[in-house]
Image (cartoon, rainbow, N blue to C red; front, side, top):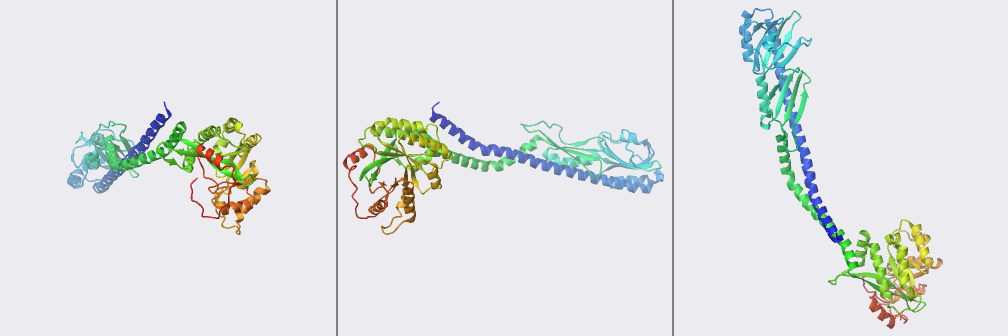
Length: 534
């Protein structure tokens, strides 16, 4: 698959993924939020049901306490009072008195005798306690409807009992959870289940019914509240309805940002590679003047990019992009190829300097030395002096390794210079680490020259340091006769800048060299510096 198509497909995939990310995260977050919301409702419902069951239990035990006033009284005398108490107080199906296992009086059946087991339709639980309660499936009088039996037994085997109708509990459960389809159940002391709600709780989509159990801290009452999956889906839809518009906005924004980032990143990588293939790059050369030879002593190679539509891309833009996108090594190799082609047609004196800038990434690359040696071999017949220019702005991690490479190339007759000296963060470190032949003074220090009678302490210090280290000095960006004369008087041998010559393409350079290259530079009267973009 071609690189362009592969990058294009990858770009679209990344954009789609960026657009889907907020949606996917939103769906997951809203699902979690929906479960949390329903869970809180579930807990609230269970607590409400427990509170109601405890309240009904309180009423039952209060009723049993009231029944003690009828202790030892004949049923015939208290029957009416029992019926009145059971009728006027809510929740109760029946109340009565016990003698051992026998019921000796009942608000529902009066003198009709029976046993507690017959009334409960099951044996009483063995608890070992005088107070107990239990939920049952039904009672003798209402066998098909659940109830809750409360019993208080005295030491003399007599006792009191009350039965709460389970219908009250089922009605309450239906009132608080019926509209949501909740399945709720109650148990007293592990007895029969009193339940309300649908039995069918089959899961929908990936969601299953959620169950929550709670226990009373006061009575042996347990509740179970089960939420149907439909309620979870409903809560999820509500959360999505609120979130989706915002998620859609985030998706669009993230897709636009990703597309812009990819356009800057992928397009630069692809465009540089395509420009190399289509030979959109060319080399311009800026002559360097020697005050000793009083003639052109060399030139610095400057890469230029002109698109097919005539648009010029600034060097600082495409060089930075090439470094960021991992294209600086192929670009430098292309520069060497173009320079080798151009130089084949040059007619220059032996020792003519040709300088080129090196990137830190290329210096540390395994192909660096072979690349330079191959370039030197191609122009060997011209007997030129190759100057390798390092820039302080390109910090180098493994200085010793690079220094070793540079010494190897110096042994073959090449020169090493620091470009833009004084503008980086490790100038003196460079002087100690790398084997240098030249210092190129940055144009910022040259621009500080205002008059021959006024000194520039930093510039003078750099020049003096170079002389003490026996390094030749090149002044960059010289634009006026005043600057030229200032540098010449302080022993700066090489001058480069618009005052001497502008950068020019290969054809222009050859014409310029034949017409002006061997002529001395005539110092003119000082004039205003020219504005330029190199």
